[in-house]
Length: 424
RNA sequence: AGAGAGGUGGCAGAGUGGUCGAAUGCGACGGUUUCGAAAACCGUUAUACCGGCAACGGUAUCGGGGGUUCGAAUCCCCCCUUCUCUACCA
Image 1 (tube, rainbow, N blue to C red):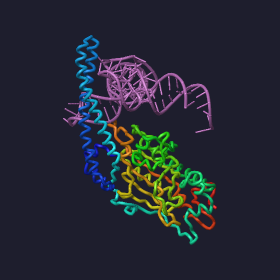
Image 2: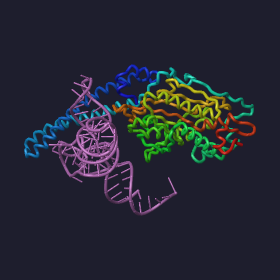
Image 3: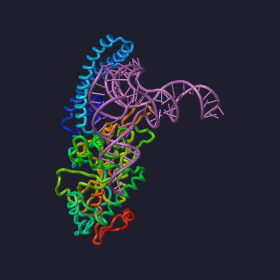
Image 4: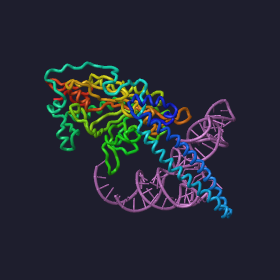
């Protein structure tokens, strides 16, 4: 959520940012918010001064009652009745105005960082760098959805039977590979200074609001109506919400945490050729890294996160590229996002395996996640997160890129984690 | 899930309708003292919003929300949560 003070004091900057993000109704929404803000402040002032008078009178009435001056007390009571009417109507209108303003604020996306390229869609994203060489596969090479059947390591039909489409069953070496990757990613994160956490994978409504999944995007999450809990779409939600309503002591900064969780996405619609096999699932595993930093350090932190993720891909020997997302393709809450994509040799295309973002104060403002700068006023922190990494497409690339007639040869770094060197 | 008891500031813990943003203690911070430290003493020690250039003033907040009242930490209702016992389970 954008800060009101920024909307007020830097309106032009906000409008330019919203335009870059391709947010159509920016000017109208901002104007409406500022109008409501003016009204809100008037109401607040009027309410507060009436309440102040009423508080004084209440004290005087108390004094009169004690001294036995019933008549005097009654006179003052008449005045408090008037005041009460005023404060009540002002409070009611104030609540209404605040609610409207809040709803409009929730609708506004974050402003993009200056380095974010202009653009509307994925084709406009900026390729920052490419690393590694794409493997040359033989003529017999097949996509991962054929490989998993050949080696019987991931079973989609079985998942359909148990749950439904998009919930695969990992079997034998497939299951062990999953566990190996999770352990590898967590160990790497820990070695990079992230504290490992195991958060709940169901979250309440307040947490959904904190990181920006709610309102408006509830359709993308599975929801348990009976207990009003949401299955997390990413560990970002519980991990970041650990720091909701916290004033973090400056010596504890930066916060660096990591966690592995299953992730659940309803992904309504969008089925087709691009989403075959492991490319898009309703349930998948992911290791997430989260940082919370002072504002002046957040972009350096984002760079270290991207470097960490690149290190993982290098150790897995996967060719990858780093993209800086354009304004139109970025997430709603992000100020700057790098996507990392690995080359899927048999599909002949890039697969997104990680997204690392700096949210600046956008989430922190919703979360009320603050610190105290130099003993002075509290100030909003910057939140960041990145996938390090999401498993399914990594698995897809590992299977496809490393297929040989003798089986799938896994990268050396995974041998001890898996307990085997090849699949098949 | 059933029964009972609780939830007060960073922590502990008073406070059952009136001047209570809240006693007291601990902790933390600043100062006096000291060569330095401890001890002692003095002072400070929440968050948000509104007004103000500021100093400062106002309002709200005693788990959350609503209600009664001129006035609520205190009374009433709903919800959340913690503990004890029972039930159930991993």
